[in-house]
Image 1 (cartoon, one colour):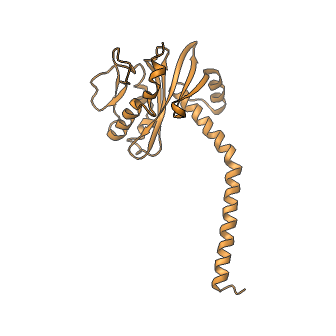
Image 2 (cartoon, rainbow, N blue to C red):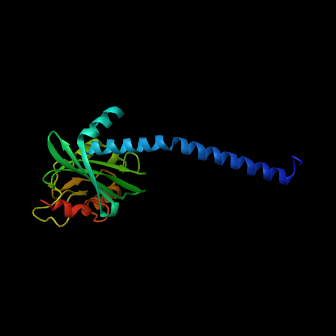
Length: 210
């Protein structure tokens, strides 16, 4: 076959594409277990972050998670998960939350004391918020710590989540200051917390069980 012919070029290109695709598929399959393990480890770290347990190496994370997290339960057809934990002999509940920020999905974990009303800790993450602005929901530990001690419910109204993020705080018992310069992302966090499909709102039945 002539090497300068169109048919040679097409066949050569097709063979190269097939070889590259095969190699990529092989590498992906070979690395998949490692990727899954890293994702699982990162998830455990985030849950521990929401329980105010940070700065652990990988081995310490695995060991601490095994000691602290006693059980997990899926709710709302798998859209949410409740983790029952034990911190210094006291029960804490960690809830998964998901929503939308300015540029993509946001999520996180909210831990609550055994009164099922008082926030013990919080950790948030995002897919693509702006560094230094919306990304602060993930990067700013001090902002996450502002959730500690806040209440999920306002007074005796337990049929809706009152915990929120506001640009101007009117109720310091249930509201947290919005991230400076990231109003839309902060609004996304507020909506996520109250959402009855993927936020804290989906756990109302559990939260009202005494």
